[in-house]
Length: 438
Image (cartoon, rainbow, N blue to C red):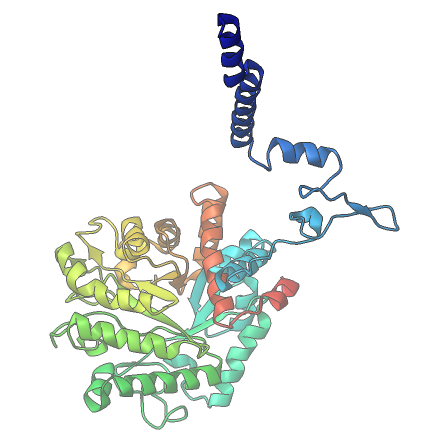
């Protein structure tokens, strides 16, 4: 066979170069396409281009309604599809906050400052003065019930409420035992309410609960909506001034007592007041002079604070601050006038309700400062509600302090908002009716 024939035969058995080039080109194109799809996921540039062309992302064109408007195809999301995002229902706390703020916005400065005073009920012209000074409330004492029938006492209280644009707090000290303002008179109860110690000895915490419910029924029937109880002070020494009014047990059992009372008062239409913060201990009577408490802070942390923490945790609406000068917290001011003590109550114990002073007419304050200065200092310290007798002097003093910048309007609003929230949440004040009256 010649060389030329061998060469032709070998060319027939080998691969032609053109198909090989096409195969290589095919693989290169496939690789390029794969790279493009991986680097351009569906729903970005393509989706934007589709939407600009008048089509929905799934390729459908919006149909026109008879009125000329476009109807988005079923399945398309967003607000334009007619689907609305479900609204989140506001919480009870948010509703309460909004109602109180709306009511606050309708009030004058004079009305706001008046709301910060729960005054000792004057013996004459009580209804007229409640209206004239826009008082937040009255606190009643034994003299306001002596010689009256329940119907007469209720009528007096109703006259205060009718004279006031905003429903008032009507408070008493019905602790049981040595401090009873109402049940000491047989016209209101056959026997005075027993002390917390007597109740516990006779029937434990169940007796405490039943006694609390009976107190609430009596107070509410008369129009009283605040009881300045329970006493949270820890005392086991009969020689202590506060012992007879206390539960008479250690901090743990006293905390359980406080919790029982606060929980029993829930939903009864009567607000409770935890007293006397930061804890009375073995101090002397601040009704008759200044009391100095030199106990270490650790004592309060491990004992005195525990009943207050139990009451706060159970939903107590108010805390009353004593006039004791507690050196480990503030050696300069009585607790009721001390910003440091109020900050501790807010920050350390987490209380966000209404803080009220002990009576500013007590010698524990009067020996420290005069009536006008006491009221201003009390507001500056962080009190929301001032318990007082001389409100006709103290309300103008606070108004003057606002006008000269010693007390800010925001500080006033902060306290009045808490008071309004408490009144609304306890059913004392209807926000809609109150707005119409202010």
